Structure formats: structure tokens, C-alpha cells
Image (cartoon, rainbow, N blue to C red):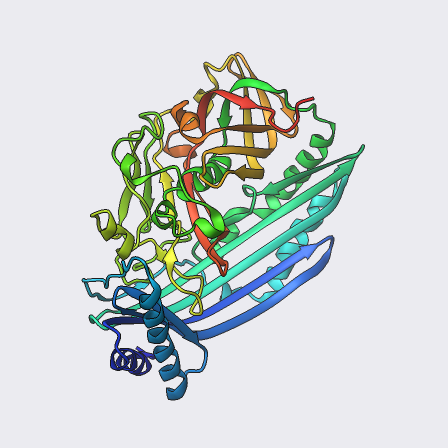
Length: 483
């Protein structure tokens, strides 16, 4: 491994300064973004960042430091500072819960990729976006068009004092389009695919799968039609949520509240706590018996898919909700031991300069057995909604409100007229307990989220929520648009 000598120096320095355990990550992160807006290339960036982070454990307290100075002096200074931070923390900590991993791995992992985006000339990438964006401007009212592309490449190397030596090559790709229509005192937006684009682990094949040029005319037409569509009614309705909206529903009402550091109050200062309390584990009826949500950091095309997390723990599958009952959390080594379990490899840092912490990874709502079209069959008076437009949820992740880009009324099992500004709200366990049908595997899809925020200082994580469309009974609809 290229960084092995430097890693050995960092670990030796940390131990010499008093660390009981230490690990280090070297990363080379490259991020490329192209964005076209109204026929003009508005963003064209390509940045590479290289550096290392060191974690040190001393007397039950963690310290972390990072540097881009990879000279001997720079490495020594970072390792020493990590130990100094751990020592300072131990001196003031009311509880010392830090514990070193016990299992070492020597391994490599490489994300599946079919076509390296670097093999696609820059001019070809820009031309694709310009053409997709141009096709958004046909229908009446479309005033702003956007098309974008993100390419991320990460090569990371993990070493620890218990003998782990792990090399990983991760590749993530995303693209999307957006049409904004303006008229009659209204603004309507349609985004494709989903509400942020199609983001997955992989290469140029992810961009090709998005089919931006093929779908641009339809998306523009839908944005235009929304200007003339009637307002979604208010009241209590049965609703069906498309799989991309289900992705955000899972992200906000299951993924974040199941982060065990949040449950234990370690995140309360910045982003709140959780209603999924530890004494409710294996007891709380989170949802109906149809609802099983699992963590799967081995998921093919998952944005959080990797061989090992940033503590050096091997990726596995585990349940958060099993047959409707709270069954687990997203955990680190420290937090898992605090509740008598083992880590499920949910620790991530947004880069070499950031401290690793529990992050939502890949979540999957297990598909049901109902074909998508049959979800509508016994809905007499309901609403079908697609693509998130807004969200709000309280700091315990209980009361929420979501808005979608589009809705359709459902009358006697048939999809009817288009509706604008559909919204719905509820209390998380009540809502999930009202789920009486989930689409089958044919409508199940892995939606990546490229911009999940957490931490202070803020870190941006990449997650995936896989889901099929699902049906919920007796939901409060029209929140925010009542007269």
C-alpha cells in the first residue's frame, strides 16, 4: 500500500504519546461537477483533496486530528494532536465510553463499475447536459432549466494498531434535470429522476440509465401542466407514495431516528434526539407487520456501499425494523457495546479531514407482493404523490410534514386528474402502522441521497434508501394549504 510507511509512523507516534489504540485513514478524494442552466455552463469544477486523519483512544476518550502535510513532521504533529485531544477529553469527561475495535482485517474492496466516467470526454459530458437542458424549454411557462452531473472518486486506506490494513476504491455518480415553470402568480418545479437526480455507486452507466435526454420533454410538459392543475384537496385520505418519495420518508423518519448516537443524546446539540429509545428495542410497534427496514451496506449500487466502515468494521446487513417492530440501530463500536450489541459498520467521515461518526448508510424497505398498479385497486378516494418538494420534521423525528412535486387523485381504484402542491403529515409510528400494502420487487428502486447533513462541524454524507411504492390509510393531506 502506498501509505503504509506513513501510517506506521502515525500509529507509532500515537502509541508513543500514550494512545491505547489508534487508527488512521489516508484518502484521495476527487469531485467533479458540471451544471448547465438556461443554455449556459454555470459550473465546471474538478477538485482533488489528499490527506490523512488520525484517531487516538486514551482512557476511554477519543481524540482526532487531520493534516494534508504528509511529511514526517506533519504526520507526527497530527498523531500527537489526536492523543492530546483524547487526553484533554478524558480529563473532563463525565463518562468514558470509548472502546477499541477488537477484530482486525487485511482486505481490499472495489466498487462495481462498468464504464469509467474518465473515459467519457469532457466535451461529450457537457454536450449531453446542454442537450437535455435545451429540451426542457419547449412547453409554455418553463422559465428555468437545469441539468447537472456529479462524479466522485475516493481511494482510501485504513490502518490500525490492532493490525487492520484495508484499501478501498469507491466510485459514485449522479445526474439529473429540473424544469421550473412560472405563470399566473405560481411557480412549479419538476425534477428528474426522483427529486435530486439519479445517484448511485458506479460509473458512467449510472448517467446512461438516467436517460436525461429521453425524459426531458415529459418533465418540462409536467412542470407546465402543474401551473394549470387544481390544488390538491385537504382532508383525510388514503395515499400512495411513489418509490422516490418513499426514499425520503425512510430517510427522515427511520434513518435519522435510528442513529444510535442521536438516541443516546450525543447529537442533541445540533440535530435533535430520537423517539426510538433504547428501552423500546424489540418492543416498539414502529409500523405494521408489513414493514421491514434493513441496513444493507453491501447493497449493489448503494451510495454508502463499501467493504468496511471508517472504524474498520466489515459491512453487513442488519434490521432496524423487523415485521413492524423496532429491532436495531445504526451503530459504531462504542454505541453498540453500550447496549450489548456489535457494530453494524455505520461509521463514516465525509473525508480525510473529518472525524468518523455514525451516519445513515444504505436503508432498504423490503418489497411487498403487490404489483404497482394493484396498489390503487381498493382505494375509493385517495391521492397518489411523487417526488419530494419539501420536508419538515421535529427534533425527535415524530411529527412530520412532506410536500411532493405532483399528485393525482384516485377515484374508485383509478388514477384521475393531476393535482398540484400535494402535502401530507403525521406522527411517525402512527403513519408507518397505517401501511397496508407495499409494491413488489418490480417497483423497488435504490435512490441515492448525495447531501445528507449531520454533525457540528457539518459533514455531508451519501446515503441510499431503496423502496417500492407503498399505500397508507387515513393520512392527513393538504397540510399547509388549508384555507
